[in-house]
Every structure is written in C-alpha cells, then in structure tokens.
Image (cartoon, rainbow, N blue to C red):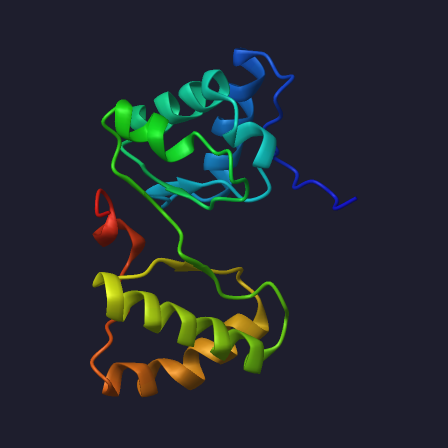
Length: 157
C-alpha cells in the first residue's frame, strides 16, 4: 500500500469533510491557480465526489488537470460539463526517480506534442525531475518545443 498524502479526499467522506480538506490544502499552496488529482483513482471514478471537488475549484477560479490515474475517471468529463477549464495529462515524467528515465518520458511528451500540437506532462517536485528539466529543456526548446504553464492548455483536446 502506498501511504496517502495528508490532505487526501476519500470516497467515504461527507461533503463537509471534503470542503474542509480542500480548504486546508489551499492554505498550503496560497498561490495555486489549478488542481489535479494525485492518488485519486477511486475518487475520480465517483461523479458525486468529483462534482463537489470541482465545484470548489470553480468557486476559486481554478482549472483542473485530470491525471488519469484510473481508466474509469469521470474527472475531465465532469469538469467540462460544469464549464471548468480542464484537460488531462498525457505523460507522467517521473514514475521513476531517474534523470535518464525522465528524459525518456520527456521524449514521449515531445512525440505527443508533435502529433497533437501540445502535450501535458506532469511530475513531482523531486530533485531528479528538476535535474531532468534543467538538463533537457534547452535541448527541446532548440528544436522548437515550448514549455508553458498547464493553465495555457485548458479546454484543448
């Protein structure tokens, strides 16, 4: 079992508990402009729960990136139905804490972007992810790829 993050929203929580967790988590990142699910496979399969979370996101003017941790996610569909700026990730950069692995994932993101015009690649705030980005961003940029904020890619499909 993977340990849960301190502000995990679970499917058995009441709406009040969800609001409380959401608000507590916002205080830890006061300049946030969007949200995504991290370990929330079960939560993102639950339209009722996602409606509560996404309503809170909308009230804060946030966008939503569906990390697609479950093939049965309803996160993106629910967000779009609610009119919330949203999209889904294409690539996880750092499933492994290894700079070479991270480069391979960035190469996959590059391939997706070449086909679709963009790719959303997400990762953790880890040392190896940082090192991979610092090392390989200039190379990718020299090939014409641009790194942008996720907020610039919402509603694209």
